[in-house]
Length: 318
Image 1 (spheres, one colour):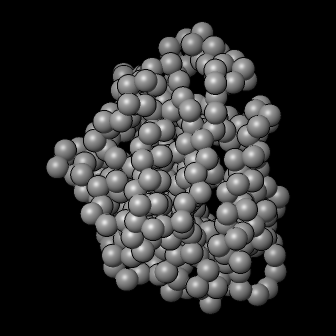
Image 2 (cartoon, one colour):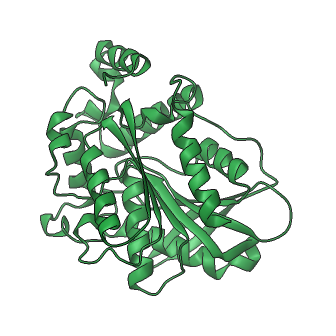
């Protein structure tokens, strides 16, 4: 179907904006300046178009030790007392953008709707920290949640992992790592518009290379920041598509968008999982671009995609 009218209005507005208003194109700025500008833009966008949740009964930002440093993990508890299931959430941003503060609203909303603890992972970003740092940080966060389940009021047998875009990539990798390393068992994985193959060879990357916010050249830059060594592009912990075995992974819910360069690799990963005997729920957001299916205040049909994820998680975390 054509691009949704509300999405097209966003694209038209961006196309008419001065080049300086789009931080991703500001070649004269260093990475720290670009990140701040883009993160500020994301915060403004989220507040105007995305779902946000109510205050939590408990909310803590923890300092979690990792192999060679410390990361932040923020936990949201919507109800008092008792052991709750946990949803480990990994934000997107091309491995070089984003933080747990930006995704505060969506995490609150998910904790409230699921009635579970949401643990949001503040993994270290590229290019200061290249592959496999982000993947190892996210896996370390999973292990930390499981090891501290009692203190967090979490049922360590009911943990799911999920994320969007680069966060979807990292969620899929965490599921692989947990299986391969005999780590904490996962009930489910949510892979929202995920990057699954850094080789970037699918038809949708060319079909949607330009004009839909996320571009092929932008993806190539993200890849160069995160995995500058091409030898890593087929490492399964960078590209889950290249794992030699996709069996014994948790049930997956995978969302793709019609006009998204990442569309085909998300759907191809779903087929890999199905072929390996993993239960998979797949939904394609028709008429949407990368991430526009979360613009619930602009897009009449956006709620259905989050609703599917909520039903999926309720089923598997029950």
